[in-house]
Length: 258
Ligand SMILES: [Zn+2]
Ligand SMILES: [Zn+2]
Image (cartoon, rainbow, N blue to C red; front, side):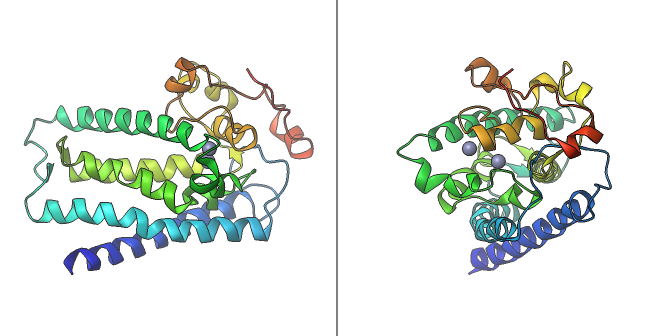
């Protein structure tokens, strides 16, 4: 009973948080003609109402699916089970960033291979097709997954809390980072400057420029946070350097494998 109540509460929090942040970013970028943030447009067309409605529907289905494993981890924490903890000094302060790094690496690795598997012709139609209905995603696509994809990825972070100790604040920070990076990678604009996207750090991190190409090409750029697995497995691609933002609004960038 307690688990059902926690799942329902988390589900509502996830859905409302998604609606607020996705609508906020959409308004800043798309709803007033010119974006109110400094950004390079990646999408060739403005989002349509049916596309946004599809993204909203899929995201609202994903919310309870993500909430259930999170509720299991939260209940375990409240009842003193699992390895999530409250005292920051319990494993030493060094463990706070170290645990974050371990979680990020595990999540990034799992997602790369799960994502590649979902693109297999036997799996795509029933696991991942819904996410790719957004050829040119909007911020509302940041949480738009098929139920099977949501179920296949939602458990990773909560399950890790039973094997690798993590402070609850670090877990919350990672969840926020997940949300922020997914929003930025699906917003249809590149918010980072191109020199950063193509610089030494950007060469190893997923950006909107990188992930947008996945939505149109399908067979490249499977990563979640880092381009490491894509680079190692030779599935990494980048568009040719786009023109200046003013030109891009009139003529979207051509896409070519780097
Ligand atoms: Zn995507
Ligand atoms: Zn995909």
